[in-house]
Image 1 (tube, one colour):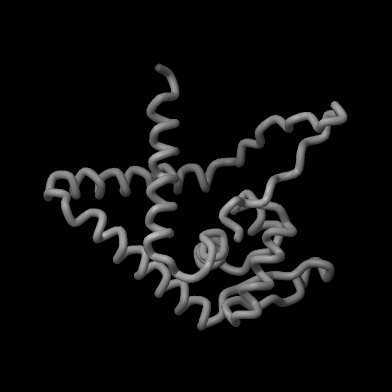
Image 2 (tube, helix red, strand yellow; image 1 turned 90 degrees about the vertical axis):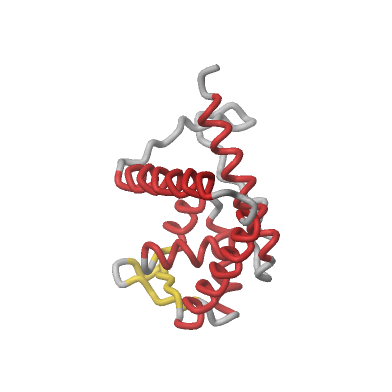
Length: 168
């Protein structure tokens, strides 16, 4: 069946990531630590850039950034190229917490992998390398924008992005 592997891979990765996050129970929603990870990976970002990277709405992103800011994990400054916008960066505490969250998730995943033999672990290591390569290629390629879905009124304007279900 065409598309079977891509769909299965997508669903399995998503379920595995949610399982690891649930088991680690780092005390924040997965969208919260994903926002911190995006800033860590890409450097200082605008709210719009974070929303686009995480595929959530700007209001959702603003709420998450406000929560991270209240915790002292990020700081905002006015964007010098657009005074109406701000740029968000991790604080030292934010970097430390992200490292701790990643360690906790890694420890939980290690427990899930404990029953695998050396060949199975090598297969997963190869899969990680392959996924990293695919992600790097996708990140460097021009972004493909899907056709917008019509609104209920039938206009040709797209429906705005929905908030992420993990943002609780």
